[in-house]
Length: 507
Image (cartoon, rainbow, N blue to C red; front, side, top):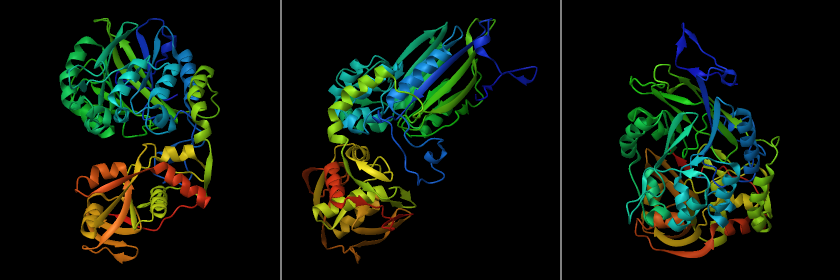
């Protein structure tokens, strides 16, 4: 077990307490089991072997055949049974983006995720930006479907001003009052569900107004955050009074919690914020233990220590039968389509320096299939790196989970170079280099891109709707789904190998 971090001492000696054996009832342990950014990963998955040594994946003890919601359910149940005593309680929390990343989201939106989370016994969650990829009606439907309580303080319905869901809850256990509230990033405003009728408020302003109110109502304040690690740290510094942040959005792997002091602010608790985040996809389960001591003078429980860890979810953990039954209710409806093998990857499709071989595979597939001069793909549109071995349609749907279609357009060389400089996309048929955000070199099919020439290209519908439209470049949506075009290309090739050719250099 990890050592407790205790910010109190007795006779100058740090305390290490066995809470379960405490008969005085002066000590109480609250354990928070947490996930974030699972992105529809309800089945087990594997990472490539060929990853950068400083990447979060390289720090993981287990990388193959990990995760899976039915295994997660078993681990959650085991920990609840082990940790629930007279002086210990357990809460299970998700910090958002539980959908939008696999065929389960493409086919069922958030329903499969909510149903399996219900089976897991989650207690609380917040919405991430990707939950707003759904329509507002779908969001509201899944909020009603959830047996756990969603909290979100900076989202309100535009037509009524009412919160989309409760901003916060006060949860009491063993006399300990816990305030839990949620926040989501402001860029969520650009997602479909928000555009249809939800106003996303400034999370910092909301926190500044809400946290002092919650401090008056509760012994401990917990933020379920989908802001990302940078804003979590900033929020902890700028808004004293948040005891714990269960974080998400940035896919940060915090093997141990971080602690941010409140600039000398005195408070009965730790006078600082404990920040946790459990990377992504449910490959590991976050565990945070909070230790409370009952103040003899006030009779209130005060937070005095914490410890945390990430627990691998491996094949050694059996599937929970009930959760597996719920999962199969959805998987059996799509397994015939997504379980098919379309080809074979001869090596890991990963990043090496500026080369992004998984993006190159997609771009080369589209350019070849559509017979154009070049293809552009936006960064972060390809969601996984592809491991060596058989490639299933399910794997490709995890790579391209957003249902984007292919768009054709014609563009002058002058505008194309401007597009490369501004957006720095991944490319096929083009080689270019930027330095200090300035384009210094650009060729197409081995020839310099000429300002007055007209070139034919393709991209995905997301890129077109954001960036081509911004530059008033006309385009035509072919209606062909990006995922299907890439799958057909791999079927024809049968075997594909990653390319590392220096076509995109960003300095």
